[in-house]
Image (cartoon, helix red, strand yellow):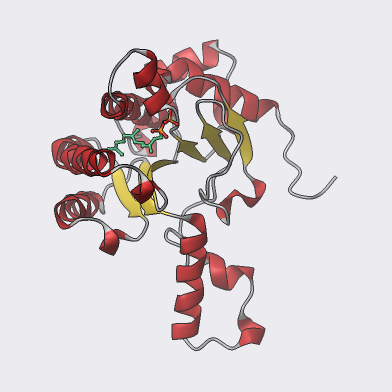
Amino acid sequence: MAKPDKSRTEGLTTKVQERAVAAGIDLDALPRHIAIIMDGNGRWAKKQGMQRLIGHAQGYRTLKDVLLCASNLGIEVLTVYGFSAENWRRPDDEVQGLMKLIGNAARTELADLVRNNVQTRILGRLEEIPAETRRSLQALADSTRANTGIVFNLAINYGGRAEIVDAVKKIIDAEIPADRVDEEAISMRLYAPDLPEPDLIVRTAGEMRWSNFLIWQAAYAELFVTDTSWPDFGERELFDAVLAFQRRERKFGGL
Ligand code: FPP
């Protein structure tokens, strides 16, 4: 699943890469970090007369496929919004169902992710997550820490503003004087300071909102919104997002 060591892939392409090239993707200009707002599970389920949690379960299947696809394509970092700090406001049964789904997924996928060299990290205030789910997520992160393939960031109980607040608290705790507080001082205290910022943020199900996702890191990211609901998202849609990214001219504020 994960990107094998470079030394072993030199000159080799995966089937996904072959299909990507056929679709017009330039493998030398891939986004290093793709972040996804996986929206539309509920609407997808409703449209088929099913409960929202069935939509989330299908969303989990999609996530497994997309992680595999991104890894084989050669993406270095994939970050997904699994549960926002605002999602606690949903009805109890949905919150509990999502926590159960996430905890089960962490336990079920652990062996596969280890075997496939995926490094999984949890972004968010882990300490506020119900104990059983938290332990499973922690075990997943601990067991995959040494893996060298794709970095898979699972944003759970995540809020972009909360992440900035947490960084500011670390600055205050470290007694850093105001004249030494700059962008770098904040960036280096975010949840994953060692990773490249997302180059491409994908949102499914058509909403044109950031929803408090990676708001600091998104400063120069390209945004790709598709009407496709997350459960229907797949390789074709991922390729479309990468193609749109490659058509854009990134200026970073310059001309
Ligand atoms: C947004 O769709 C999606 C979520 C709040 C949850 C995303 C979770 C998954 C895809 C399952 C993840 C599994 C793991 C292991 C992380 P929505 O419910 O807001 O959809 P709607 O806007 O159509 O109601």
